[in-house]
Length: 327
Image 1 (cartoon, rainbow, N blue to C red):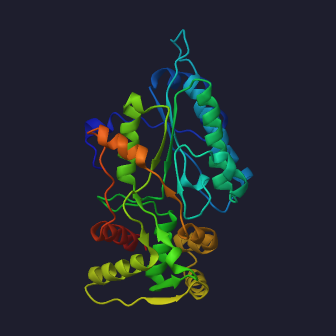
Image 2: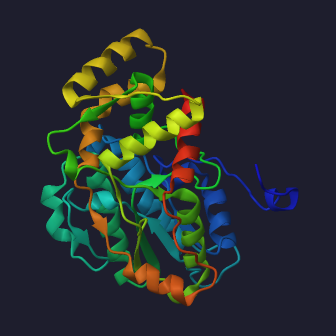
Image 3: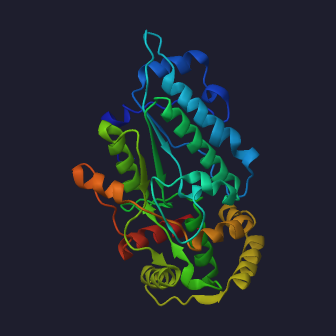
């Protein structure tokens, strides 16, 4: 909504379907696109930690094959193969959920047997496909983001993101869950505006193609206890009075969430949180740390790339205001 009319006119939206061959496009349109585009940033996926591999395969794996097909398809007026570099947006979920540091050049094959949910498995397989095709000559850059949070400028966030849903549940219940090993729980927040800008600038810089990058907030992570205290202080500030939150065991908190969800059965966000909370909550415990030294080195080389903003109280306040409006 902040784009000028001139900028808006440069955007062409085409309706497709990632679950279908040729991305749901007609053959003519697919070939026409192949002749017009200069590069592909593939960020499309079905993010659902409760679905199996087979349920996610079409959108998360086969669509990647179709994207690569588009990348090597000739346009109508090209006599030679018109390659388009591809930037595949992967995930930190291809790594095991342990409090370790992982590097861009880690051999990910060893992690396959540890991955337990369909989403992680499908993203792993898509990476493997990208590596195979990259070895055959197509320029493919793999980018693994940490957990992407809302805009650090406006606070606008993905309402289906787990941290957003989790915080919504805490605000509605006016309570925070306490875990057995609370000290090992962290909130991983990488602002989407910075991530999108960084990915775009990497795509523009041809010297950065054919690499693997980690994009994660390199500032110190927020432990869950500090996150709770900051949230309570910000909510009190927004309401202009001291707001007290209960600190209760996780199972008790989940029981209260069930009661609230039953009472407000038309609230889709609470329903999503309740039915997936056990699957989601493990992502707060010992989240992997992505080594970003290669990205930081690149940032230092290019004026167009900026360091990631820290999740200050001011940024967190924007997120909480967005979630308040959502509720």
